Image (cartoon, rainbow, N blue to C red):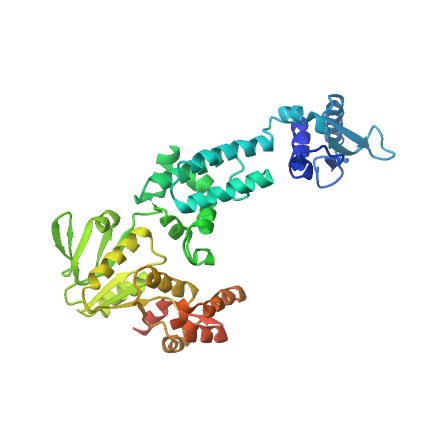
Length: 416
């Protein structure tokens, strides 16, 4: 083990966490480490060889003027009690530790952030960069939600620029990683978690921080997907795709279309459709299509929190339906996520949306399938009672809190 570098790095770590690092004036306070403590577990006085090697390195560093030390009382020449950094020799200490000073790392990062801000147009990325710039300027530190490694940090900023400039194109996660970094697994290994934290905080989306979104759903908001996006539906839809007419109505067991098709599709009519029903769960969607769908219904598989491309399809359906007297319903779980999914669809796309089998009667009829609520979950659910946007669910939520129970829509499959 290189005890010289270990000693210097341990002291420099402590220095960079201290007030002395941020101060512009000289401090008399020592940056010291007690060797016989958990601050330096490598100094084991029972291991004579290790102890003497460390003692030797400490004395050499003292002679070079980088550090100073103090022997333990009555153990002079045997056991060193504590060591401290010579702040007048910081530059040489960093050099011998083969380490870039934190202040220089911060200054470098600030340059990268400023340069990126001049090229970014997305408001959520700019808000993030503004906060990072302010944080680093005030704290002289790299925020914990950014990579400490300078190369990883530069690559995260590179990823944000790529996301900002790619437009509405969707990319498979590994294709995105390959195009951005030349390595299909780099993003997943090094940056995925950091980017998710940033999106959760800065993406302008209600309920994103409520914990009901999956990581894959969050990444889909910026067009990075694990698998090609598909939309499943069943019903009478007439459309044109690049000038060619398409009639989906004969596909009585449903159809799945991909993202490029959704973008190219122009919906011309929904003949004889009187009701459109969005279904959150895939099993319930399939069961409904095969066993319960009527000829005047259009059934759409919603899934979880929809991506931009799914939202585009939903908007095209809504615009076509507005030309007729068509009623919209949504069927989802009777839980926090289900209510939030309903609310998002209603607020952003379909203002006339109504719940289906998401009321007090439906909840009570499935009592044997109730699932318990923990205290944290119940607290999040209770917040919806103070939000008028969820007023159609308030009677149900009050009973759910009273009974400390929620229910997933798959329970209804047991009744068939």
